[in-house]
Amino acid sequence: MTEYAGYDSEAFRVAYGKVLAKWPADREAVRVRTPFGDTRVNACGPRDAPPLLLLPGGGGATSASWYAQIPELARVRRVYAADLIGAAGLSARVGDRHPRTVADLVCWLNALLDGLGAASADVGGHSYGGWLALHHALRDPARVRRLFLLDPTQCFAGYKAAYLLRALPMLLRPTPRRVRAFLEWETGGLPLEPDWLALQEAAAGFPAAKPVTRPRPAPGALRALDARVLLLVAANSRTHDPHEVTSRAGALLPHVETAVLPGVSHHALPQAAPAGLARHLTAFLTGP
Image 1 (cartoon, one colour):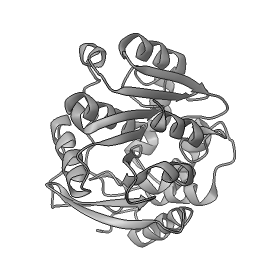
Image 2 (cartoon, helix red, strand yellow):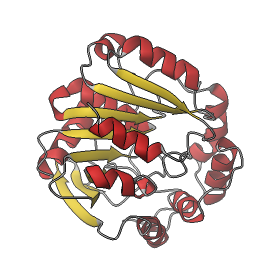
Image 3 (cartoon, one colour):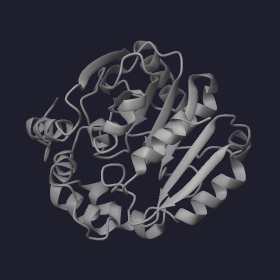
């Protein structure tokens, strides 16, 4: 990785390793070649179990941040948690090549599944990862069996203006102090897991590519989605209105189960989720 002002690649790797160490001992690192570069995937669970692809949020989120949910999920699935190409993590893009459209992102995900030997998979995503997972299901439904979305952004409702205003200083000039202040505000000042928070701070200034963030999924496409979907939103989210999200999703998706998770905010997911979340996810994945 290249050194950028305010960014220390070695400190990031150390922080990443401390969070990844919270995964079960049988975890393994996999590198998958795609048209946009090598993707880092952290894998866990029985090799003969059905595959589950996990996509993290944007910003400083990485695949390692799923650690609190992995033990339960890995009992029933072979879990593959990917670092987004061009975003914070250990994936390595080729030169300036990175996804610039939704079609590029779907191409990357299909290449990732191909490299993992999975014709199709269950897919789960948090925040931006939920937006990406949903677009994948809409664009290539044969490759997505079941889909769970944890407080997905820009899928069913827009951002709150107050959230964007609070995020602006961090987005314009990210520093560890600004990252911490923003996360403390969004999570309501609740205690945050120290190693996870240190990883978010270490990601400040990461040499990321400009992410693809548009368009929002079209209502007609959502109505035509045949996959089963579990949508879980954070009751204390300051990102968007949780009840607006569940209401719109319920009106558009033909096979959706929705719930509002109490006592948790957007950025506290998935690592500081309410007790029982992983069991809820596994029940959805293994249910009829």
